[in-house]
Length: 293
Image (cartoon, rainbow, N blue to C red):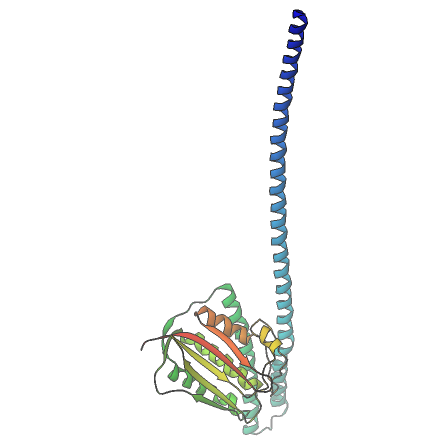
């Protein structure tokens, strides 16, 4: 009996040792499987990340392709039209040597206008590219808005006079100062006023407003045009956006003016927005921090 008990004990010990060995092997396999699972999860996360990154890049490529198509459309239409008009005027001067001095001057004036229109469109495209690539620098200085706006209005008088539009600066005699880059601020105001001229009917008014808030000053450009629909207001500050309203004098539009305004304003720590009701004109506001004299 003792021998049987001893034999049985040895068998049990051997089985126990075998079980222990199997358990340790199972533990190692479990650890290996856990490591494999973690690695698979990491790979899956990496794949998801790459997929999202690829999706974003693909979306950006589609946007760039759309911008390229829009740019090609501008070059093909808006830039080609003035060129055709220039060539026609030059052909007329060449083919009719008996034109009077007054007639030649009028044709040369038309050519100059078309060239300036082309230059303006090209500059707007280059301005936008410079802003987006960060290749611009601001030289801020203290600017009296009353004086500054009056000068800009004087420079835009010829454009408004062609449509018998009156630009009326409703300013104050009290100096109002902001810190801004004068060159970029001029482009902001010029773009907003030029837009107002472009979409306003003849014999209407455009008002330049100044409002003072808590630590800020607002510049307003108010027109008597057709107004802007809510759907257009949502996209009007995007690049290459042609809105439903059409220029009243057949002027061309790149769809870049308002997007440039937004980029320049925000780059100088300001904000811009539009208030408009269809049929009641539009008011564009630009707001900057005010500074002491």
